[in-house]
Image 1 (cartoon, rainbow, N blue to C red):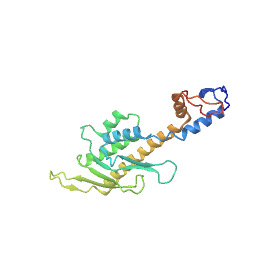
Image 2: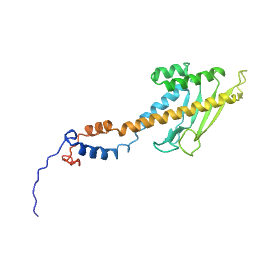
Image 3: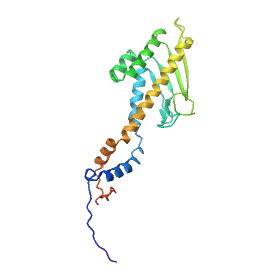
Length: 215
C-alpha cells in the first residue's frame, strides 16, 4: 500500500475570509439550540413571578410551556396560582429591588397591588394549562377573594376586577414569551455564535471546513 504525507495549512476562525466565516457560523447555528437554552430565562421568570405573587407550578419537570418564534399562535403559558406575596413587602417594592429597569413588570406589580388593596389582600387565582396550545389563552383562570367579615368565605370579584387579574396574569405570560424570544435571537446572533466558536478554539481549513482535532 502506498502512502504519502501532505502538509495542510489550518487557520483560526479570525484568520478566515468573510465567506468562510459565514459557513462556519451557519454550521454552528445548526446545533446551538440543541441544549436547553431556556433554563436561565425560566429561572428568572419564576423569580419574577414569585415577587409578583405568582407561583409557577412544575408538572412532570415542565414549568413553562412555550413555542415560537415566528408563527401566529406562538406564546408562553404556565399552570400555578396567584396570592399576595407573603414576604410582607409589596409586589411593587419587591420587583423594583430585583428588576429596577423593567417598567413593564413595575406597572404589572402596581396593578396587582392596587387590586389586592381593594380586597384587603385576599385576592387569589388558580391557573391551569388546558393542554391546547402554549400561549396566554391556553389557560383557564379562576379568580376569587375572601369575605372581609372574618368568615373565610370566598366571594366573587367584580367583573372588572376579575378581568384585570386575568389580564395581568396573561400579561405576565406575554412578558415571559418576550424574554424567551430575546434569548433565542441573542443566541443566534453573529456575536454569540462567534463567542462559541472562539471558546471552542477550533482550527479550520481555508474554505471554513473544520479541521480534525489534534490527537
